[in-house]
Image 1 (cartoon, one colour):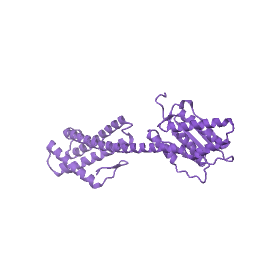
Image 2 (cartoon, rainbow, N blue to C red):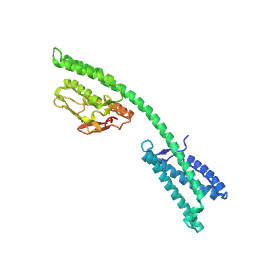
Image 3 (cartoon, rainbow, N blue to C red):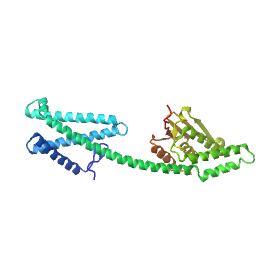
Length: 347
């Protein structure tokens, strides 16, 4: 059973465990001080002074370590973490020794500097004890962080596999193939558009099957596939589906999980009314760091979104360690912004 647990920097473990630990540590520290400094084995020397010392330094170290881990995570800012923690511990010890020296100078009618000089051994021992306490807390935090990261890694790997499987199921489904074949029938009898349609459908399905085994593809590959998808859908909806694509050439070498954009566009088509009176407007654009898919909001009354598609996309971005996706919804528009993963070869 863990003796200390921290939440938002506040100690909330069972109070009796904390008190027993501090009392035990106080007795041990008081005994060490009495032996090394040859003090009397009295209640004041062994217990009261030690309780104050241990409680102050223990709680101070807890607060400093918690603050350091929260504001300067070890994984991303190890140097700042160490520097800030050492400086704060030094400040804690300085204030503590100054307070102790002030108290004894008052009772002994001496100067604070004289009290500090006579307590050199006590200062050294206390500093070593504080370093030990800090090390213990750091070790506890490291262990807890390792367990958290390990569990998160397992969870992300599971989510990624599920997302990739669901992405394949979602894109190659009977409804889409049925609609595509219906559109194909209307283009037969020597219509030159039939060949183009079959070619786009074939290339689209090939991309879906091949890219499913990849964690990332270039934005250029994804956009080529998305344009084929738009061509297939335009034959179904004609001018009722309006598409505007504006992608910077410099962004095409960045990467993105495969089929992420197509899933967003498919959601737009699936959940919104598309008619001559209410055409669906879909815009795809980027700012060099992220790419956004936005559509005018005109939801179907019979369609209720489960949000599973967005969860799949978000899980895949989490798996590759990227930033989170951004979802915005107003009365008139719905947009999803995906972070672009910068390619190592991109300057």
